[in-house]
Amino acid sequence: MKDKAILVLGSGHLANRTKLLLTQKGYLVTHLPSLFPNFPSNDSSTIIETKKAFQELDMDSFSMIYILYEKDEDNLEMAIVMMALYTNINVAISLFNENIKPHLEKANQRLTILNPAKIAAPFFVEELDRNIVKGVKSKIKKEPDENGKISKDHFLIKLIAAFVFLALFAVAYFHFKEQLSWIDALYFVVVTISTVGYGDFNLQNSTAISKVIGIVLILCSTIFMWLIFSLLIDRIIKRRVQHALGQKKYYYKNHIILCGLGRLGFFIADELHKKGDKIVIIESNVDSSSIDYFRKNGVDVYIGNARDPHVLQNAGAENCRALISVINNDFANLEIGLNARHFQFGIRLVLRIFDETMADIIKEKFDIHLTKSMSNIAAKKFASLIE
Image 1 (cartoon, rainbow, N blue to C red):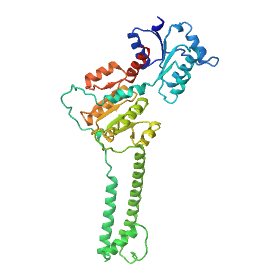
Image 2 (tube, one colour; image 1 turned 135 degrees about the vertical axis):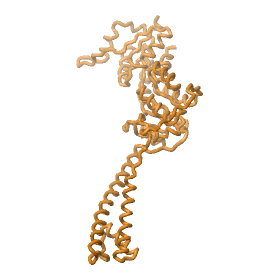
Image 3 (tube, rainbow, N blue to C red; image 1 turned 90 degrees about the vertical axis):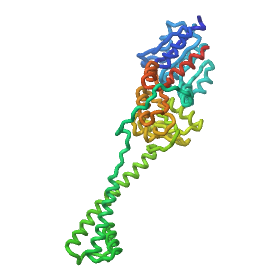
Image 4 (cartoon, helix red, strand yellow; image 1 turned 120 degrees about the vertical axis):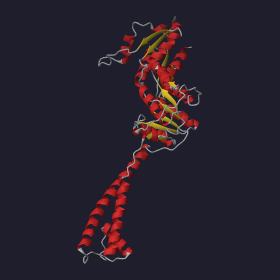
């Protein structure tokens, strides 16, 4: 049975699904979710602890070892241990970091490295063009939603209008009461408002009412100008910040919205960009290293929370061709999809759903047929290595 024995190391969706597929194919699978939960200790090493953990196993019986932990660092560490201890056994590992892949494969010819995100990305992209039959016939009535509206601040406009009214009132007053010509009255009001005060026109010999009007004009205009200047500067800074974060209203049509620029999202975005599709990426992590990469390649990236309807609306959910949500949370992806459907009922949704049972319920209850699991797709590829 040497050619039938498989060792799977790791926990999580990918390890469990790979184990299940291999078992269904008739292989004898030994699964160790955690080798040494109490490690590390100061007086030991990973290699020593691994040998202890494998003492009761017949390592010569295994034709393949799968290293499928959820973190790259754990997979990398265990791969090096396997290279040191068991050079005659084929090893397959999951690794998202593409940069170190060639170095590891060069160090051990029995080592096979697969990137689950890179494997799954084309399957998500393919779903954009697949014909589907929708089960829901009637359109859901769209109720008014305050969350979907963009509030407009008219305070600055009202402030400017009041300032202009004050200036015009002052011009008219000095024209009629002080017998100034229209141009002289306008000139006097402007130099008074701007606090220049050349002295060629003044209220020294004017009535008390005119002097009071002049005082009111100086004080009110100073307040108006201070407020207007402050609000304008605030708007300019906000606009520049929003521009830097991509937080603007996109008016594209037939584009694709991609929510999540993590491991899977990166390869999906790269695949779509290479195909020439117009995409808008929504990413909540402003420090994501992938943002600059895509922006330098002409891809729009909106920094915000895709679960916020306002963000989806700004990304153009009303006119997009499809929405792909691959955030690392099943319910977040579902929420994003349903929010997008609020803006466009017939929108094509491709959601990343880890839980297969949950995916079936979502398909049945919400008529969302395009649900995919990265780990499920990658598990099939890992399982095929032994064939």
